[in-house]
Length: 101
Image (cartoon, rainbow, N blue to C red; front, side):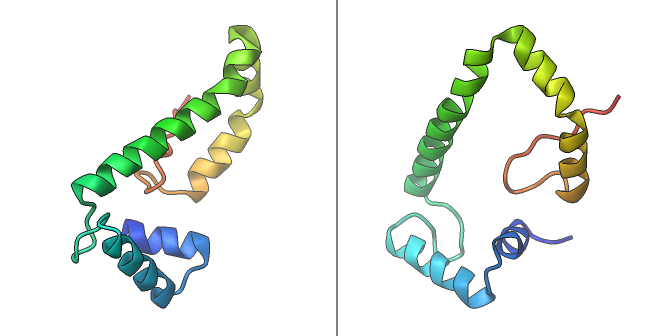
């Protein structure tokens, strides 16, 4: 199986050197350990970024309302299935498992 970091680096078009440099910068900021794992500060920053992203992403959906959101979700089903087929689950970007049926 391909590791999360390898999958992300491939998606971004990064070389191993690019990835190693990014790891070093994050470790230098106290966000990663020498082994490449998130520190407590790294985990806290990750949660802060995810929360802000989720809040920003929810705004357009909230303005649509329930009925129009359901209609759009139905219209986007072929696109979501194609994305799920191209991006394995579980994946490092948090895309949920595709719903079948």
